[in-house]
Image 1: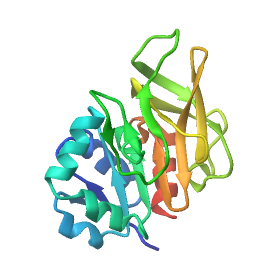
Image 2: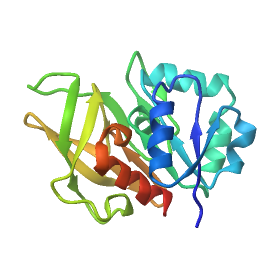
Image 3: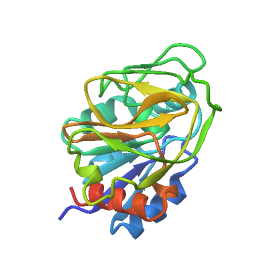
Length: 201
């Protein structure tokens, strides 16, 4: 079984160490990848991220990782976490209009609702479809969110969450590409189980 997970360090990630520890707890062998030439050495990739869409994509391009990640995504399973999920989109509108990886069609826009923003705290996921990421997880499992922007997508939705009266996409899945708006590395046992599901794909 392929368990070598490459965590992509493009310079604007912030949560790499906590993700590494959570993946190890989920049974993975973890490599931190900060050079595009090493992307092919991992069975699966995790794209983390904390910060702004525009800055993250700028650093990806400056480090020469944009095209190699696009190429890797053709056959390598990828899990985008929080900002990493948003970067899979076609375009983001944080600090201007910025092109994303375009691996999953959608736009990243500010969360607009009557509840407090940023959205912070534990919430449940309403599963859409049968994504392998959620196998074995109870319907009332909660995951930790911290975000002010959302991935607007209508075709590849794997999970929905409600904040106030606003429903947003909390997980996407397209073939071997996955994204979660929440932080599994901060979501206790449920987060470890989700990461284990990804590791064991």
